[in-house]
Length: 346
Image (cartoon, rainbow, N blue to C red):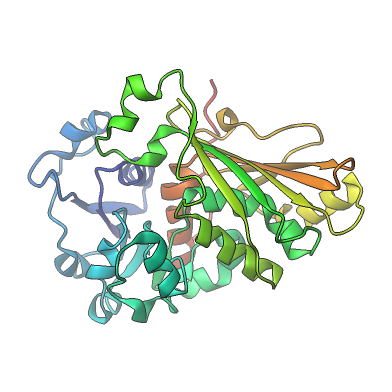
């Protein structure tokens, strides 16, 4: 029985962690951490947990939690995990951080894009970027996981095979991404009010979204050369989901069969990445509530470009589900343990 603590349990990612972990027979959530709701019953904040969780929310005491838990999920804003983690804690418990604190290897880039000083840069190099499809073996041996962002997960999985095989010009990548409003978090913001979001769609953080350097760093690593991307996210009036449509110039003429073989080379044995049949396009409604990523592509010979498409549930594969996928690997369990939920429809 794994003992699990969730710091930041009352955010959307934290709530999804609880929902998924409570369905398992091999885990026990011993700590529902929440800075805003200390002393309140967890089920009073998330009523879907009524009669499933009797516990009250506790403060973010990571030192005490490290003495009790086997793994701690940090579903917290940027900066908090880095300010709390230390060698003593990492010697006692495994940490899976859902924030960006350890995703970017260049501390200067992190501080430039996130506008905060990194509190524990000594752990950046050790932290494993927790995209299991790419870093599976490193994840198994890690004690600190940097769980990828939602946009980077969907973008990277859509583009990775072609970047790895050198079939696209890494300086021509344009990523058009759309997310449901849960991606903005549970905090009260005027821009996320019903009347602001309903019947509306907008681009935001144009040319400045903080996931840009994370995507560039991972794609550069895959390609073995520097990548410069244009990334524009959009907010759409739905609860969950990310849809990515990415464009890049081809480095040579290729057929559908050749490109399909490349995707199959990397993903045919991956449980959670589904390469769709020809002429099928990824749709958010067909991954909702699941840890699956649907990907596909379309060659445009007229412009010598390829369109790469992907869809995930931003709260599951883009956050909580991927974090649990990493936990499974860290503890020697089958990767899909507790994550076999078929996407919900309708």
